[in-house]
Length: 412
Image (tube, helix red, strand yellow):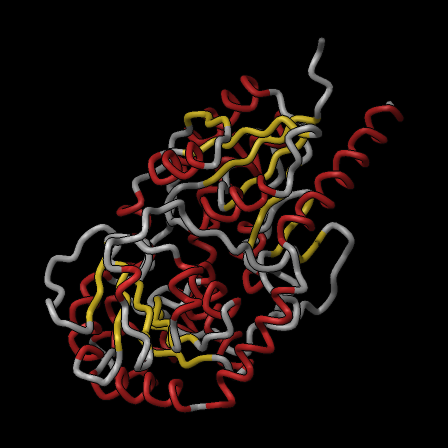
């Protein structure tokens, strides 16, 4: 009997865990009786896709370390040759699975390959990268030169250099679009990041308000996903007679900062749960410090009074979903943007990774632990998140998009 289910192909650009998490959370919203689903990914995504019981298609992706290094240095994340190779790889995967709908998360080459394949394409993005969002400021991220200059001077240099830098970042994809006979995009990095028939925002609309919202742009809400992980042997023995701080710098934070952060917090009357991103090297062995290579972020946040992270959306929303304030130690622009929304809401404090000091760490943590307003705001946002189902909205979008696609096909 032929399989009449609609076919949905998700592309997870496995350079950071967030770009794997959001497609996997999307897949959970697609009932198996209605959809045949596959996830194209590489490296970082393998174990998580297999744990979810989904079909995985091999996909070429740059090394996560190279991606994080380019972010830290302010360099273009992909060159023209890489994106051209990506397009060819995309088309191979698309031809193998023959989807009715493509969902991508930071797979920039789909701007070309999905159009060449003539398959409807939606990109999952953060709302602060939307061309329809106006950030309150453009903060200078942690770059090599920001460590050497006073912050006001670094911010001034970034203000004038950013437009040119963004144009340079747009160059490789536009070159690939020209190569394949597609019109170039305006040299605005936000257009590069969100070029698709549909744009799906993995955020709360109250935190990142768009100047307008056409029907092709939708808010799915936060993707609350955590990897399947065996709880550490100490999980049931963590004392709860003092505040618990959950510390993780994730896959795109500055791992070199973790020993300093843990050492400073360990001196406070708190208990630390530390996700060491695969290594515990250099971390102090103290009675109030509990370390594991990885921890289920939602469960860890639910036990905590404070979450300390790199400010990225995946962990920050886990904290907010638990009603817990966030101390974000941001390095790249994505993290700064995300923390702008959290700070503006009153649910967190932003620190710079390139100017991290003991005083700022301790003062920031102390303020959020005693600040009833920050916790009340986080709890309010938790209620807002609870009322939003990313998976349900993903399923609704797929049904709408495939219905529209079917209507277009029948009209021809």
